[in-house]
Image 1 (tube, one colour):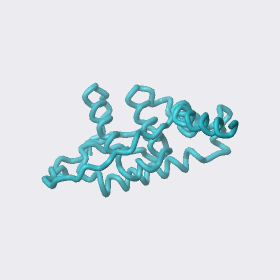
Image 2 (spheres, helix red, strand yellow):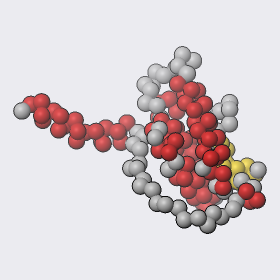
Image 3 (cartoon, one colour):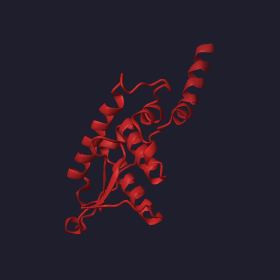
Image 4 (cartoon, rainbow, N blue to C red):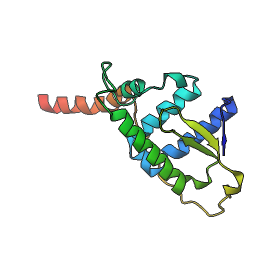
Length: 162
């Protein structure tokens, strides 16, 4: 398995395509936290900011913790990192066995590694795949969440006034 450290535009596109495949799986589609966690660490890495991927930044930017978050007192990031690692392992053992690129979050840090899977494992499946209905994108940032909830809040407020 070859680990890639070169970040060319074409490689970044390959990683983004793999990220989309992972996020469209049921496990990630049903977990906003795991999806946002993976999107954040992959996005920061592709942007060349992997040295800024720390427990604190994940807590604040992904898990909506306050700026006074103390990773020594709160293990939420470590817990979700473990869940993310298990979900990725499950994805690659079930759905992603033939995916060309493997995204891994090694224990001990949160910076993803990208591996090309061996070509002998890649066999094109000629079966017809039934199209599935895609769920809308999961809002990850607090601003996206508030923007999607504002109309409902205003509607509820309007009902309460009348």
